[in-house]
Image (tube, rainbow, N blue to C red; front, side, top):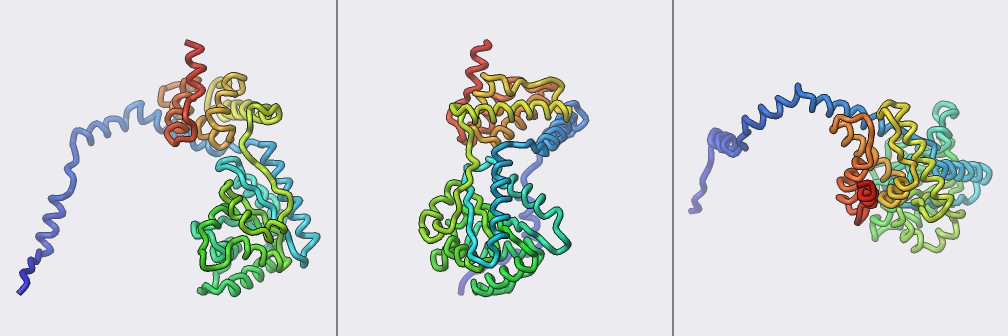
Length: 340
């Protein structure tokens, strides 16, 4: 007969209590002492400043150009409604402004629509990334439930019906690179999108990282249904036009930080040497720049200063860009060495 040991609920509870980590009273007291200290005030100030900074939305020429391309795609789709539609692909590195531009465009395009109408439907593919994910996202974006079925034809018909009812002319599909993760046992995302375009209901814009290019390259038939690709990539300091865009954005950001009273004086972000170092440190990506400046602002506030110094930016690159292996060196350190 097998020997089995049973533990009573009381014994189990006692054991759980015994296994609980012992909380150091000295740590508790030290933490509480900070809550009324200036350190806590700085943390509060840092949080408020970071929230305000995160809400900054500056006009960025490349992003506006992309939005104009979306508008052209919408007008083209409206003119060819009922016939086979086309797609536009915008594939670029993360944090280059694809999603922000698309969200703003959709908001503007839908602002004047009558109740129940949505000329532009914006969706994001889930981690599954397949056609099922796309159709369910379309239904969800339009406030509709979806059939409890995996039948792709049923989901497609339902999505088409909803888009027709909403008067949708353009469908923007974000995170298209997730389509690479779609099931190998069913239709690929591009094959299904091609079939969807054949319905003649909407034009489509695909947004994603460069990984999505592999998805498109696998389907020559789908490639033939795309219009000229739209680009919203990183800026190159060696290109005079890109350099001017980068410096212009830095100047506008510096001015906006002052307007919002996040700093009391200019940070000199647009000064040529610092602008070049920031471009290199952030790989010419606006989203990376914003993260670096955000972290530098936090460092300055915790240091009880109302201005951002070059040292703050250098530390931010160390703490964020290099920690995430986005760059392998810190070009702003060279500026500090020159000033020393």
